[in-house]
Image (cartoon, rainbow over all chains, first blue to last red; front, side, top):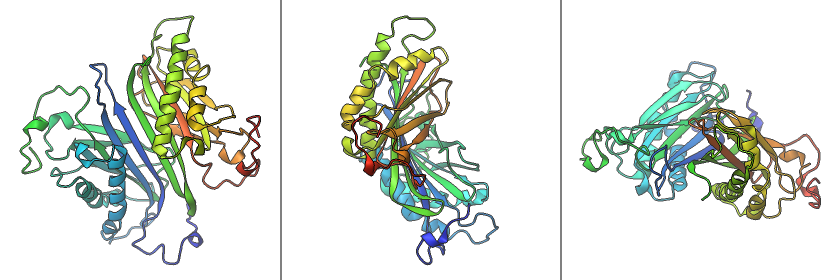
Length: 208
Length: 194
C-alpha cells in the first residue's frame, strides 16, 4: 500500500513519527468455565495499535532509535487498558505483550516493541517486577496472536500463567505492525494446578 | 438473570487513518458479546420462549455494554447490528429466537429511537468462528455511508452447548465514505428507511 504523503504535514515521514491507522481495545469478563460461577469475573483486556512500519520493504540496519518513538504510544495503550479494567492500576495482576509484523517487514521489527511495551506497562502499574512475557510473528490481515501472560510481580506464579488471543481482520497490512499489550485482573478462572501462589510472592527478584 | 453467562467480551475499534489519509474524528465502533449456555442443546424443543426472553435480557445488557465501551450517550449512536453463533449442538432457530422476537426493544430503549430494522446475521459454528455483524444506520436503513460490518471472534466460544450473542454499535459510518446515496443529513426518520 502506498501512503499518501500529501495527507500528512511536512516531515511526517521522518522519524520519530508513529503513524497509527487503527486502535482497538478488547475486554473479556469471564464468569466461569464449567465450574463455580464467580461473583467477580476475571477480566482480561488487550489494547491493539496498528502502525505504519517505517522499515517495510527494505533492510535497514539502524532501527533501534524507533523504540523510543514508540514510548508515548505504549504509555497511552497501557493507560487505556487500565481504564478498560475500571481505572485502578492496583486491580492488575498479570500482563503480556506481542506484535504481528506485516509481510513487507521482518521479525526484528516486532522486537522493537519489547522495550517500549514493557516500559509502558511497568510505568503505569508502578513497580511491576516481573519480566513481561512476549511473543511475535510475521503475518497477514486476520492473523491471530496468542499473547502470553504471567503475574506482573513474580513470573513463577502458576495460577497466572495464561494467554489471550487477539487479532484484527484487516491488520496488519503488508507495511504495518500490529502492537499488542494485555493485562489481566486475576488467575485463570478455575486455577487449581498448584505451584507458587500469588499470596506467597516475595517480590524481590521478579521471579518468586 | 435468565441466561447463564460464561463470559462477556467487548471490542472497540477506532480508525485513525485509511490509505494514508487521516480520518478525523476517527470512526469508532464497539461490539459486546455474551457467551451463554444453550438451554436446548442436543434436543428438539418446540417452544422457544425461554430463548426469546434471554434475547430481551441480552438486548439491554449488550447494548449498554457497547455504548459504555464507546463512552457515548446512547442516542448519539449512529448505526447498529446484531448476530449470533450457535454451538454445534444447537440449531439455527435458537439464534433466531434470541435475535428476532424481543431483543430489539431494549436495544432501542438504550439507543433512543432506532426506527430502522436492526440488521442481523446468524450461523452455526465452533470455537473461534468469526462473526461478521452487519451494520446499518439506526434511524434510516438506506443511509449508504453506514452500510458496514464488524468482525468479531472469541477463540474459546461457542462451545458445543453454547450460543454467542453479539450487538454492535457505532458513533460513525465507514472511515472515508464516497459512494453516494442517502446521507445522514438527509434522514427524515419516519419510516426507518430514509
